[in-house]
Amino acid sequence: MRRATIASWVAAICLSESSIAASAHPHVWVAVKSEVVFGADGKVTAIRHAWNFDEMYSTFSTQGLGTDGKPPTAAQLQPLAKVNVESLAEFDFFTYARYAGNKPEFAAPIDYSIEPEPNNTITLHFTLPLKHPVDAKKPFSFQVYDPTYFVSFSFEKTAPVKLDDAPPGCSTSTLDPNPLVADDVKKLSEAAFTNMSPGAHRAESWAGCSPSRAASISCSPARSTRCAQTPRPLGRSPA
Image 1: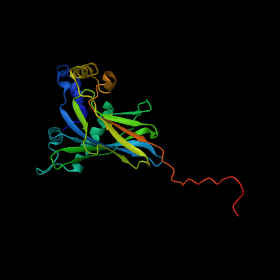
Image 2: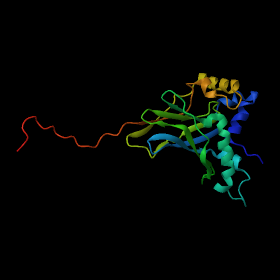
Image 3: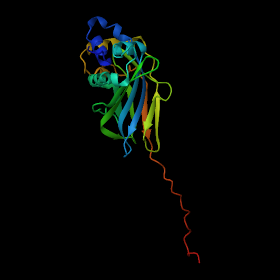
């Protein structure tokens, strides 16, 4: 049995001409927590995601995977995790980063798994390594969203973004988006219709309409802890 992935749902809605109106509001809801991973040299090396899916999608995507009427285990969900993260490449992993005016590229996801939750939902964990680590002395930011708005991604309200092994002086903040208005919804519908093929850079066609919070990371140079020495007046050396 072929499993429905989050990417396949988005592809199906984009390939259906009768779904233009339907694509302008979400059908799947995802609560996001992310960690920005730093290397030993103080550079940003990856983003580690934890995506908690709504109960309806979780139930549909995992049906038949458990045994003896029990919910599936993490081991039974591992093949589903693999096909999900592999298919996300067509959609840029729904993760859009910015650094010094450029868009850093991500390598293939690693450390992926799906964890069943007590509230009958599932959480997809995976890490997105940057192809080229970036120096965090310049602001690094990212958003998680679906340009077609078929999937609604939203950062958790409490501690949505953390820093892993960050050097001293680094901090993170999030910026709320402007509320979507009728014109924005229209743009989302047009974007979904005019960019129907998976892999098309839909985010470019409706810049400014993102319904997602942006996470920003900045690092300031650590201040020196050396004590300043009082200058000695010029003149004779003390006896």
